[in-house]
Amino acid sequence: MVNVAMIGVGDISGIYLKNLTEVFKEVRLVGVCDLIPERAERGVAFCREQKEKGFDCNIPRVYPTMFDAFKDPDVDVILNLTRPYEHYEVSKHALMHGKHVYSEKPLAADMQEGDELVKLAEKHNLYMGGAPDTFMGAGIQTCRKLIDDGMIGDVVGSACFMISHGHETWHHDPAFYYKRGGGPMMDMGPYYITALLQLMGEVKGVTGVTKKSFDERLITSKPHYGETISVDVDTHVTGTLHFASGAIGTIITTFDVFYGPRAGARFEVYGTKGTLLVPDPNGFGGPVRLLRPEDQERPKPGDPALLNMETNPFFGYRDMPLLFDYRDNSRALGLADMCKAVEVGREARCNYRQQHHVLEIMTGIGESSKKGEYLKLNTRYTRTAPMQNNPMRGVLDD
Image (cartoon, rainbow, N blue to C red; front, side, top):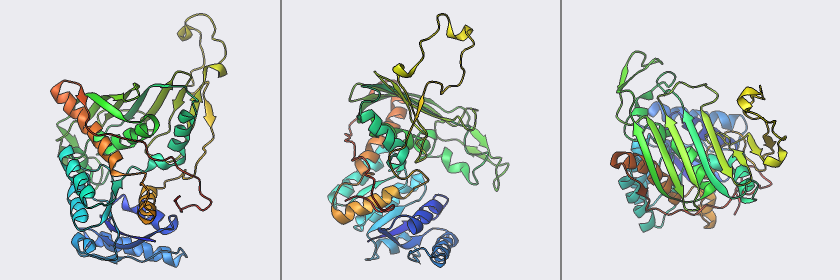
């Protein structure tokens, strides 16, 4: 059993608390800490309620400050759930106190911070890594197996789209999404790029064109209704990824575009023998859809646009069965995997090398846009091990 202390008990902590108390059996939450003490107390109250319901879970203590958690000899791993621009400071001090670290995405707000964290982890021989762990779910893992098994042939390229009009219409505190460490690429890009790495491998260079469409955003959600946010980051980001394999990927992330609420996530991988529709990488499940030319009817002669043909965008695709566990919201899966890695001495699937490579890709797209040139990456990446289906849900492989 590995002991974890949670730093930051905000919005995302809810699903972590649920899964740590209900699903993952090799992680013990021993403490929580938040700058707003009431949040930490609510986390403890939730765990107490879970125990009363019959779940075999620990009731964590409340740390007055994060340093109290760092100094606690009972703590093995720090779970860093603070805001993106706070990740660096929390992770740095945790590493300096000899604690392994698992953080929400991204690793840090820029490469200078990320580089320093990597050096600290390596200097102290500590595990460090973090979200997203959605790639470990049934959807992306099934896609990885289909690609690795040659179902679409050699990978030619990919295209990803995360399209929305921002968070100010629904989020209760949206300002930080438009500040340092925020923006659509830093917020949502980790899901897409991490999945791309798992499916297609290392990226060796990027190009990008980015812009800020609106200098201010009007909040129409409570409790900040009517307030404005000054936008400090680019909010329409387009990038081209040059993979080491020779494949080429494109990605668009935006907070500036009106789009159908159920159509804002598109993810496609193209091969020499077919096309794979990858599920939303912000989730763990499906659907997974495969198009192979031999499954298609012989096309009618003439212009398809004038033949009143089938307009269903998924016509001709086959729904593929999901081949792995963790189809629902399984956040903390990556943390559980890291804890198992700490215990048995293997590599964690959500390791810092992956996070570091993702961070360089995301920041590199912006840097490429500013310089107006192709940017060669310095970090290197090797895919982590695929998932294994274990007999007991919530127990990770050795």
